[in-house]
Length: 122
Image 1: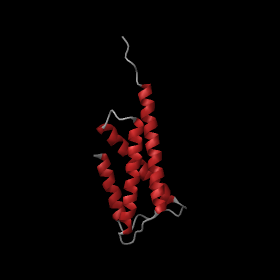
Image 2: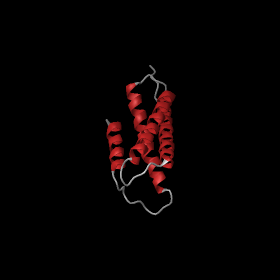
Image 3: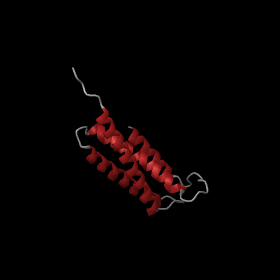
Image 4: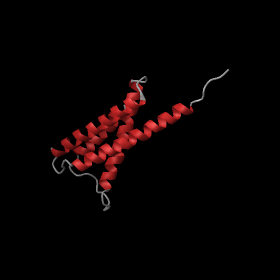
């Protein structure tokens, strides 16, 4: 459910003709794209992990990255048709890089936790 809810939030934000006013900092929108899609990548990973618990971590990481990047691509295409918005390939690149960073970070945390898990001894 968190993945679906967050995807809906991203869609509604993209459907808005006038996004929120951003500070006058160069490329701040790309940082926001990366952060938003970093979280999306993590949510895809969590969803895949709960659905396919026996899949390898790298399989889930790759599937999560591809899914988030594809969602970002469809989001940019969607914005092309929204009055007052435009499709920007640099935004999609920021989305993809953010998704990659989020997925790698989450994968690293999961790997660390699995190695740190206590072993049972009698």
